[in-house]
Amino acid sequence: MNNYDCIVIGGGHAGVEAALAASRMGCSTLMVTFSFDTIGQMSCNPAIGGVGKGQLVKEIDALGGEMGLAADKTGIQFRQLNASKGQAVRSSRCQSDRKRYKLYMQDRIRDQNGLDVLEDEVNELLVKRGKIVGVKTEKGGKIKCASVVVAAGTFLHGRMHIGKTIIPGGRIEEPNSTRLAENIRDLGFEVLLFKTGTPPRLDGGTIDFSKLQGQYSDERPVPFSFRTPSIPPDQELLPCYITGTNKKTHQIIEENMHLSPMYSGQIQATGVRYCPSIEDKLKKFGGKSSHQVFLEPEGLQGNEYYPNGISTGLPADVQEEMVHSIAGLEHVNINRHGYSIEHGVIPATALRASLQTKKIKSLFLAGQINGTTGYEEAAAQGIMAGINAARSVKNEELFILARDESYIGVLIDDLVTKGTPEPYRMFTSRVEYRLIVREDNADHRMAKYGRQLGLLGEDVYRKVEEKYERIQKEIGHLRSTRVYPGTELDQKLILAKSAPLRQPTLLSDILKRPEVDYAMIAPFDGDLRDLSPQIVSQVEYEIKYEGFINRQLKDIERFRHIEKIRIPDKIDYDIIPSLSIEIRQKLKNFAPANLGQANRISGVTPAAISILMVYLKKFDQSRSRR
Image (cartoon, rainbow, N blue to C red):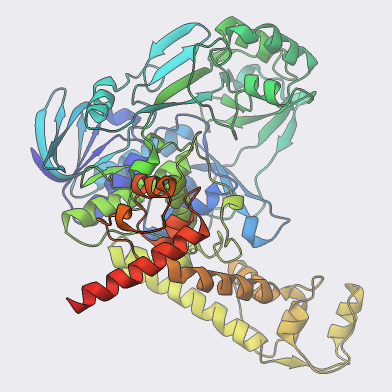
């Protein structure tokens, strides 16, 4: 074919979710990638999820995406991070079998109706009267389309650095995409450079595990996907191992710091603050005597380990010396050396909240091209870009998630309203309403959209509805059932160092006590139900944190009204009186879609928001009189 509804450029985590979403929504879709064999490749560590990232995976899944299902099928270790803390900050993480994960995603792409794959390179985006009309490839010539998603990962102007050696490419042994980067610049976009990196890969057969501390999977692994009933008990799981750098390691690095591309001046790009190289760690945390290194298995076969914590661009011989100074790695063989990589980034402020570019209609950007780092951030943008590429083809309103309903909404809103001066990584701390927007209720928040978009079947959605009907029924029951003094519950309360009952008390009020959990009151629930651990957990949370949740709901309601006040696309800020020149310029540059977005732009004052609110009210009134 030479005519598609949607073309997706790239086969990484963003490209996979974008292509699957667009094709599942009924659009004829073409994925263009250098090689089918690298679709779904885990370029860096073999893990999915993490703090703030697990929430993204759960939301992708509830929208009908694939990442959560892939993680469940190919996981070789599952852990709940922050498990001792409240649900608001708990996040899932798993180690995946790198090869099996990639093959799983390739199978999904291969089997998807309406989705073709072309092994080629896109050199040029074809634009006519401000709208995408096709692409030009290296081998296939011109291909017409109605929408494009660029998910180029680290390939846009990608350059890898190992000491003084510079290798053009987006990944080891893979080319970069220079002509597309130049074409994007020619279309009027600014192209910046960001830097990331990866550590060496180690031969597990040469690691001395007797010197290392094991880190094991949770006894009862929690799946990522709400469509996965449970992780099968026969699914093979492996431990990770913990070691650390030491004084000798630091001395080796410091003596060779001048050979690091980041500190020799060879790389000028901005690096990742929250996932720094080992060189960065020594520069920024010079007082620390040791930095942890997590040895993560790459899969069930092959016996290769990923040493998470020592990402580096130092020369190969220095990497050898550095690695051999670490406990347990004294005689390890390095299968592949680490490297730093700089790649092209388009400032995300050039995008609307739909991930459509402001300059060119039906052109969407997703993943590291927008300045993010991480598989999960890329996949979240990918599914949103794919959804909106499909909706633009159908001339439907573009789909936007709000900050108060999703981590994905926070991620995209942060990018398009504030931009990012460094690679952006998601954290729970970025989310204002995390008491309500949690990992455990992602299906409740997102599944309705997945069904409306055609990405989730009615039967799947109905199961979600039934689950939350049970939760609400049980919460209602606990709020209406009283227990009287003098029962065995008093003895349980005393054992838990809680006061016995002095009067008839609602079960919900007893459950609100910090030292009481659902298991303690369940035998005294006159209408005891067989509830799953997931349902029990949510019932407990909703009751224990009821006061905080209600307060946050009021905060959301208070701010939601300005999110609903839309700003016309063609508004002329120059004719609005009392706005400063600086604020006018910021509003023109960012082009906020509503007052809420305008309010989050750095430097836009509350007074300016009030002026805008009055002007927009008058504007609406004058328009309604016409």
